Length: 372
Image 1 (cartoon, helix red, strand yellow):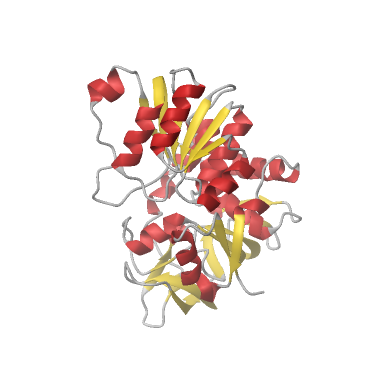
Image 2: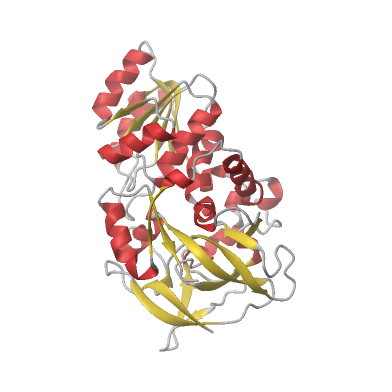
């Protein structure tokens, strides 16, 4: 079958919207007709060459749609099901899945190649080249064939444009605060970057009971939205936040600093380390440019003597099979803001404009709406 998709052929070049050939689903595979796809910064990192991957590649890893067909041995979903695709597959059987760390599933090793579990590809161009889907998905395509390990069935009444965001940005941000950082009641939390992931780190910190949720972001629009998502204080710069945190904690500084900026730098990590007190934790969600060093600290003065901890994580340490439905239940109950995350909707042909808007600080989250 034929499908329209947005493709990265060469780093640094614009997205190319083209028509590809798509294979039928094989054993353990699912054909999905996508309705919506979130425009995450991770796809921009791949396009810009900040992260490495096998090209050409179909972009997109935050998608929701309807199952059209399934291959042999598929047990998780059936045709007609509404699904969210988790950007981290969960096979349920590898060492990490079987010990409760589904966010580290071994199937995630193919995220930057786009190969399915059998080592092959389902997208092909007219020249005969195989294309992977980013995070083994490719949600910037109207249709895709994915592993059942990536599929999470959801309730039919959940809007699919909202549901798409649950595939990556929402659990990554929310889980950063709740699971990775382990924010507790009464804590002071400083969040660097209030975009699509940072906004959900704010929501997670408030849900966990933080007293002070301090946001640092240079973009006025994002600082305004941060208050809507639960921030108690916002600052344009790390210097302003540092002085305020010192005052509000009587010199003890924050328990947590969370890095959710668009592009991680050594300066951000240094500022985050400086703003936490003794036994403070710096949790890093952002990624930086390949080849750069983002953590460069004096161990004696910054880490050892203060017993500070610096920690990375994947997917907010969330379990896709459990936490994706859980977060949608919170949304259904009015306890999690998702509609408010969507700043603007775009057609597939508008993808380059959408990413320009993201880079210019105009969006919390843009969403591509595929044609019916």
